[in-house]
Length: 51
Image (tube, rainbow, N blue to C red; front, side, top):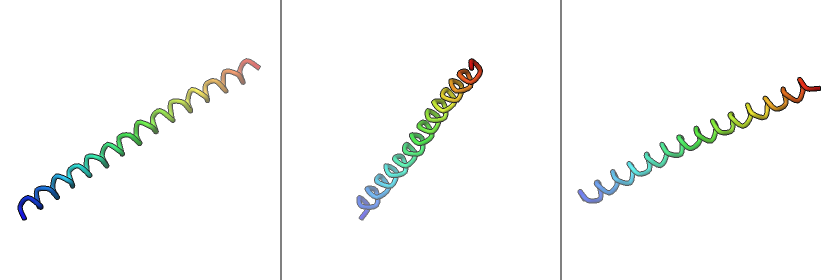
């Protein structure tokens, strides 16, 4: 029974770490998307100013 409890704790920790990494990955992807969006906006503004 003790080993089952330890295994469950281990699996729970692994699941929590996975969720944490998933959240971090989503945050990084959102930052990249925002950066690309800003770059596109800057290009549009520059083209508009050149017209």
